[in-house]
Amino acid sequence: MECAEAATALPGCVEGDLPEDVAAHLETCIHCQAEAVRYKRHARLMGTLADQYVEPPADLLESLLDSVIEDRKHRRSVRRKAAVGIGGLAIAAAGTAVGIVVHQRHKAATRGLVEIAGNVIDAIRPAGTSDLVAS
Amino acid sequence: MEVPVELVESAKAGDERAIEELIRRSQTSVYTLAYRLTGNEEDARDVTQETFIRVVRNLKKFRGDSSFSTWLYRVTSNSAYTLMAKRKRRAAESLDELTETFEPPADTAPGPEARAISSDARDRLVAALSKLSENDRIVVVMKDIYGFPHEEIAAELGIGVSACKVRLFRARQRLRDVLEGDGASEKEQVS
Ligand SMILES: [Zn+2]
Image 1 (cartoon, helix red, strand yellow):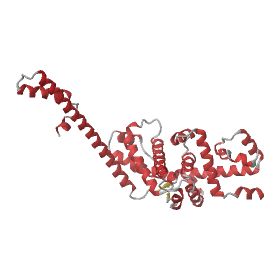
Image 2: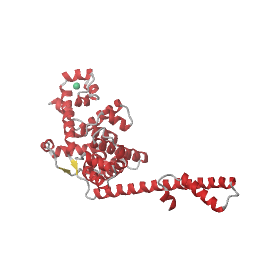
Image 3: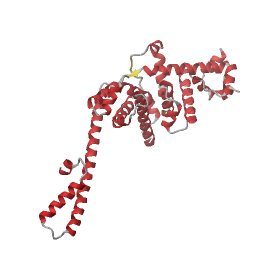
Image 4: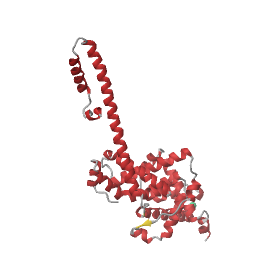
């Protein structure tokens, strides 16, 4: 095997991950051994960067906290709007239901109808959305 | 980075103060990885911001199968990769511009092993890292600095494990070329 052929796989020497023929070549080739030493040295040097912290800009923390708070607020409001949407659907459904009731019981007194409609709305209103439907 | 389990649990429960403390404690680690991956301050900032938004959104999904810091690093590298992929799609910035604007970071509190190695050697390494393509840099930073397994890096990049190894080896070769100069091996062979 030529050095040039071994070169592509040689960086695997860092974790001892070498094809057999490359490993065999390495045993006998001083040039590739020197290369292997370099790769291992670089990898060791890379490893030392793990505890070399890069100091963040002084204002980063504040902007991180701001953006996280902003995102939480935004997501809460999206959830609230979604809940209002469900509430709206509930009212629409209630309207339909009332229509059916009116059709079926058109002779009932107005007071009775309002009562029935109220009951229908209560029955189909999703739990926990009462304040949202009201607003 | 020290993030106690109790702090993570409180943050998961939605305790605003715990979330704040968690960000305070882990921002340097996240920023450092973001910086190593992107090679510049502005992108590192964006990645850090995106990371914490995702972390806080998904805290409830963190089950503790891995350590919190491993999870955090995973989200960070994912955010960095997303940013770079997005940029590549827009082709907004060339690699040349990135390397031109590169400035060596201000390192703090070196560990004993790191202190033994001259800061000059590390500065040269960091500068060499900035000369790699983004794809090569991600692989070599995640593997050789942070020790992520091939499988995880490959999954992150959406490539196979062998393609990931090819990329890693190529990145190490480029680093070697930058650090030693292309002719280093020949000179040594002669002497
Ligand atoms: Zn050889």
